[in-house]
Length: 96
Length: 320
Image 1 (tube, chains in turn blue, cyan):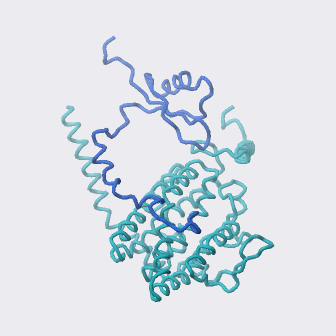
Image 2 (cartoon, chains in turn red, brown):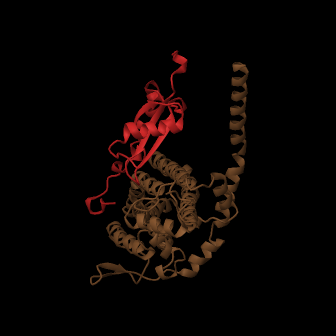
């Protein structure tokens, strides 16, 4: 079997309970989405860990790189006023 | 058993059972058409409010009294735009597009919070909006963190977390003015006088007269009634006004020890209805501004499409 025949990789996301976001739990190889969904059920929810599964082709995920962190997040570091704790209020009204 | 083989009544029974058991409804679940419609109306109205709400505050960004106040106000208005995005996205999970939602706003079929039809006349209004308008919105949104529709509830959690600074920065402005010169204190009092009643109107009509309330409560879209939430807001805000040495413009406002709540006067419902009907001080201006910004942004959207198209063509040429 040549490398080009490897089944594509899928990322698996599980919603553990209604009302919660799907969370990434891992990945697996499968021929298509339907198969990935069934494998995910077998691999990741053997103990009823979830109420809903998402599968996404890994190649469809676009991710930022850690090397980009500075360009992405530096501008936020000098804006402490975006946090509630930045505003000092007297004790009498501090439960706002 | 699939959904096709069981009747609507049975689906409805299971839907209500799920809600009664405090479970959330998620996008791909079966839901009554009226639940979907009701949610689209409420969430999109909420989204439009966030975005239209950027206008009265944006009015003061260039005239904020210090660089710090300007940076804070800019960050707050930016947050409101982000909150609009979270809410539009939640509405879109119900099978409606962003374009349809914006079109409904522009054609006057969708509403937004009436409070944003009042003008911001002085810098103190920025303090009053953060303190009172965001304060009232937070009371409502804390309650909505437990709304029955999952994406809406999760959006509320995120918004509440981010919004905690909005009210504090507003109160900080009011406190600085209230402790300033007599002229500054008068400015703060004037802003409170003008924003107090519209803030109470934000919670909507009395429970008995609220068109959507009973069904929304049964479906747990709303978790607390308009009057309950309004009372909560009054109870928490009166001590804050007292601490700042400002007077709430209501002669009937008095602590009721028996109830354990403040009693307060009646809202001017004629004014409420007038503003909702489109005849507030700034209704036309707010909508016209939104339409204009949307139209003036058309070339950006077109340019983005054109660039994508060019990239696609280049890729298929290279692949060939």
